[in-house]
Structures are given as C-alpha cells and as structure tokens.
Image 1 (tube, helix red, strand yellow):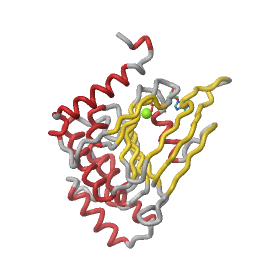
Image 2: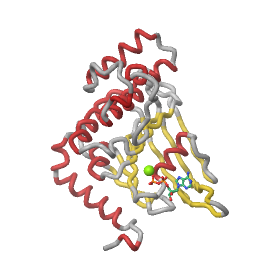
Image 3: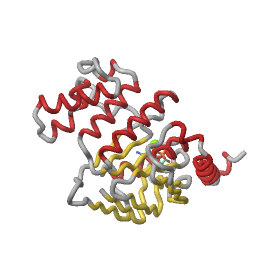
Length: 256
Ligand SMILES: Nc1ncnc2c1ncn2[C@@H]1O[C@H](COP(=O)(O)OP(=O)(O)O)[C@@H](O)[C@H]1O
Ligand SMILES: [Mg+2]
C-alpha cells in the first residue's frame, strides 16, 4: 500500500490550551517500502502512527492510501512498543487472531501460526498466556500475528525498544526475513539509528516538537543485510549523516 500525507497538523487538548504535536508534516511511503522515522523524544512519532492507524484525527491535512489491485489490501496494523497482545488469549490464539478475523478455519490458522512460532523460537509456549512470556517472546508473537494477517501497511512503534541488544538484533533479522517474503509497506519508528539503517529503504528525520520532516536519507545498502553490514564504510557514512541531522534537532538546553 502506498501512503501519502500532506501538511498534517495534529494537536491535543490540554486544559484551555493545546499541545501541538505535528505541524505541516508531509511524506510519502511507497508500496512495499520499509520507511523508518527517527526524531527526538516527544516530537510526535507515536502521534503520527496513531493518525495513520485512524486512532487520532488530524486537525488539518490529508492522508491518501493507494492499494495496488494485485498484491494490495487496505488493512493497516499497528504494533506498540509493549503489550500489543490480548492478555486473555493464549499465545497460539493471539498469533492466529488476524487469520481468525479473516475467517480462516481453526486448524489451518493454528498450523500456520504454529509454524511461525516454531521458526521464531516460541515453540512449546502455544498454550501460555502473554503474562507468562518474556518481553522478547511477546514482541515475537505480536510480529507473527501482524505478518500472518498480511496487512497492506504495518506501523511499528519502537517494537524492540525495551529489549537487550542481542534480542533486538535477533528480532531485527527475523523481521527482515518475514518482510522479505511479504514485501508489505512498513513505517517503523525507532530511537536507534543503526536499527533504522539496517532495516530501511529510506529514513525520515523529524524536528523537535511540533514534528515536521527535516531530513530524508535513502539507504542503498544491498540486501540481505546482517550485523556485518553495520561495519561497512557506507553504513558508517550514512550513520554520520543521520546523527548530524538528529543533533541539529535537539532543544537548545540539550546541546552540550
Ligand atoms: N493524549 C495526549 N494528550 C495530550 N498530549 C499528548 C497526548 N499524546 C501525546 N501528547 C503530547 O504530544 C507530543 C508528541 O507526543 P508523541 O507522539 O508521544 O511523541 P514521541 O512518540 O515522538 O515521543 C508530546 O509533547 C506529548 O506530550
Ligand atoms: Mg512514542
């Protein structure tokens, strides 16, 4: 699914006043593109995903979605930083939930979900509940559920933000492998410049609040990418450019 946002303005009520979260934000995400969003804390990244998911209404501006007739569908799914799963459902039911919504028969959907759970190291936990899993496992189940639903657009809000470095690296590789099979559009919010570079086709940098796009970096690194990719000179050059852009976005009292 291709998405185009034009001059989005979003504010939240705050007593008699309002908090301006996004101002004149415009960008496009191509069909099948992996687009990452980087920006200082509080600049409106989560707000942007909520607007795209239809959970928050923009004050002004336009969002257009274009689903290609061949591989496209209009489904948009959002994965939160934590707790995207239904606490009252077992792991297998959570993983297969999107398929259940699409009326896929129980045996087929549980076979498909079970295969992915095994592939991603969650075998044997099918009948556990989310609170019995580690955060890393919960995020795997959330990612599996999302991919099984085959959305046209996946919105991910710092999904690996609270994991340790090794777990994050494993899940990044798993995410890339799944995305490579499906090639749905992804808009991925992260704090982590290396994560954005490893995953994305293109990266947008937002200004401090109210957020607007202040930089765009194409990532022409060949795929498949691995941990080795982050040691190449090309990677480091891109990283320097992005870090420089981000430094310029800090509020004055954050500048050393
Ligand atoms: N529900 C809300 N009510 C009032 N203000 C909010 C609400 N959600 C977010 N904000 C404010 O909007 C701004 C952007 O928030 P957010 O989108 O969460 O930023 P980010 O995800 O980049 O950290 C922040 O100043 C935040 O305090
Ligand atoms: Mg956020």
